[in-house]
Each structure stands twice: as C-alpha cells, then as structure tokens.
Amino acid sequence: MYTNKTILITGGTDGIGRSLVLQYLDLGANVVTCGRDQQKILALEAEAPIGKLCVLNADVSSERDCERSVSHAVKLFGGIDVLINNAGISMRGLMEEGGAGIVPVIKKVMDVNFNGVLYCTTYALPYLIKSKGAIVGISSIAGYRGLPGRSGYSASKFALQGFLEAIKTELVEKGVHVMWVSPGFTASNIRNVALNHKGEKQGESPLKESQLMDADTCAKIIIDAVEKRKRTVVMTFQGKQTVFLNKFFPSLADKLVRKFFFKNGNLVK
Image 1 (cartoon, rainbow, N blue to C red):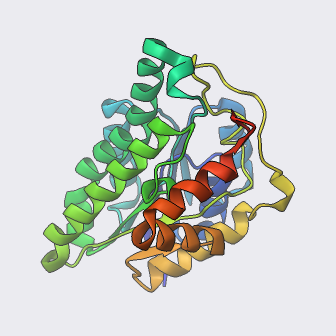
Image 2: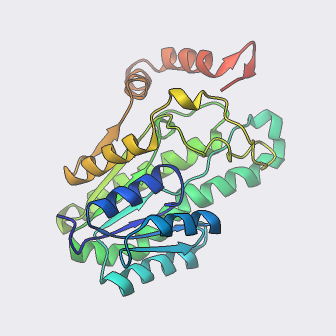
C-alpha cells in the first residue's frame, strides 16, 4: 500500500522519528526527513535503500527550512501523502527558578514544538489535500494535562492539539485525515537534551529509560493508527489514566501529579 507513497517526517534522525523513517522505508514508501546533527544524518542515510530516502539538514523552528523540506519532497517524489510532525524539544525547570530567564526557554520550545508544526503543515497542506492524505502530530500527555516543570512543553502540546483539532474540522470534507498521538514516556534522547530553566541541556534523564516504551514499538503503533485513520491515540495505561482523571476528577489529578513529580518539595522527575 506504500508503493509510490511519500511520507514527510520531521525530526527523523533520532528516537521515534528515526524508527518511523526506517519502518516506512521497510514498507516500501519514499521518505523525506530532516535533522540537525550531520553525523546522525549520514548514519541514517547509510541504512536506507538507494533513491528512497532524502535527509535534509534543517531546523523546524525556521519557516524557510520547513518550506524547503516540503519543496524537496514534492520535487523528488511528486507529492506528499503523510506528514508526521515529530520534531520536538522538551524542558525541565520550575517557573520560580527561572524568573524572567525562563521566557526565552519557553519561546524556544514553542518555536520547535508548535511553530514547526504550523510551518510544515501550512506548506504541505495543498499537496495533502490533493492526495487526500494524513497529518499527524506527535503530542504528549502534557497536551491533555499540564505537567510541573514542563510549563513550556505543556503549553506547546496544548497548542499543537488545539491547532490540529481545529484544522481537522476544517478539512473533514476535503478527505484529509488529521490526528495526534501521545506516546507517554518513551525511551529516547529527548530528556537528555531537554532544556533546563536556564536554556541549557540538562544532560541526564530523571527517569529510568530502560523501563520505558521503546521507540520501535511506539513507531509501529503510530503507523497502525495512521492506516486506520484513528482520531487520537494515548499509548500507555498511565497516560489513559491521567487523561481520564484530569477530565472527571481534576482535583485528584492535581494531587497525584504533584506526588509523582515531587519529593520533599523538590522536582525529581
């Protein structure tokens, strides 16, 4: 079913994005992706079949780079059938610790996690309407429930889901499917490169990565959901529990989330 189909995936050189790229290639699709680390770009290219993958050195927070990524997909493969807005950056830091210095950190997170989706979707939309394709946003439980220490990240994911829900309604008669998925905590490099309240990479993960869902499993769930044109996917039991509690028992959710992330008044996760 993926013969002559073109998948555009942002942030495809690491984590979930990389797994999505390789699995779509295995399924026979043409794939265009982007990343900022040249070594990771070269490593990904080395694993791909000749003529099936295009990897660009691009930053999704740049509107010009997003337009260029879409343009390359169309020039090389003739159109776009699926756009997966995967590129993202996280943060971990309390508002009171950052003061005014946390403002540019949150702006940077919004630039990548929301504006990147806005730019790529805007330029890809005419081709997705033509192909009656799909737009996918990689969201998070933080898009349903604001998480302490992740104020900017939560804001970006709420914005992502609101944007996608709005255009889903706009595009329903055009045949374009719009969906968002929330992987929950997934083993990846995103927490190691998450920004602290000073805008510096934290360089370590506060979670036990070995106990989290692996990126390959997450990618398989996403691909299956795209094929079935699901509306949303919340992947983990903990995520589903959080969404349910936050919707129907918000005060209880406040207490449980506080207990999960804090110990003795300190942010530990």
